[in-house]
Image 1 (cartoon, rainbow, N blue to C red):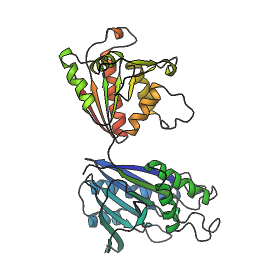
Image 2 (tube, rainbow, N blue to C red):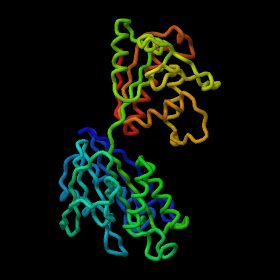
Image 3 (cartoon, rainbow, N blue to C red):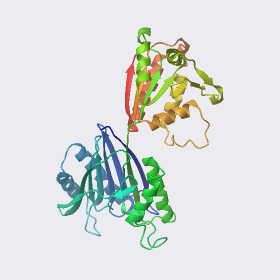
Image 4 (tube, rainbow, N blue to C red):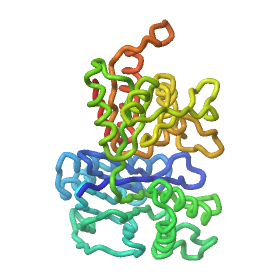
Length: 382
């Protein structure tokens, strides 16, 4: 089984507080995902510190193979005591999903997680134990493509309490809303965003508690292969092109020479879409069988700049150009393979474009940015 675990998070601070008292940590390792959502006692700075310590401790210890008992003991001995209430803890939920679908959920004092499969809200089997005075709920089950798991802090199920809704939103109401969302939205980030938007509306813009959401959607991985530049040795041209054409998923070609090689191999020509050209962005090309064809170093450099920005996915109302389309495809992909030709391009032998070294620098930096975004990236040179 080869699954990809897509994640989306959203948080809302209590009205009047700059910092949210909840924290979420998402760690990826060997295609498995470890997520922790913690809700610190109270709100504001102290709660934020408590929950941040909790997610860091749990994430680090679980990743290193610590037992649940060891994790609970460490948290109990580490978090400071609240002088007013005489207690010191942060509630938490741990979700660990392996690439083969094996899933382990640990819950302490957070609302029960939501599990949606085939349009139904179901509750996997669980057991309750007590560890160092804390009642822990553990669930082990197998997930499959299409499943959605959502974890929330109690600020979500309390939304609207005493105002729009006398008793708050309630767990079942949140579940019903998630069921409706799951029938319309196929993206974990959008699920968390829409759920948080509804939550904020129920609070009428003045949240009475911190609220956080962690959504996980199980799906097949999306692959993308990018060919950029011709090989150093012409004898390797057919091999690089064969790799590109035989890879599953999205196929992209960056560079005029590379585009000509691919088009020639397919017995066709590049058709240039001049309507997509902008003063500082070269036009898009079209080759039958290839998802996107662009110019080389200029497009790659501007795409790198765009990937570094925080709001890269907000494309509403923007003109369709090579940079926007390449950025979108990269962000939508989980596994990205760059096939980088190392032949020198005579067009780049000038002070402004340092040729091969610039291309290599841009692609290596792009690979690093994409890895930081949770992508699996491979760079292969020819």
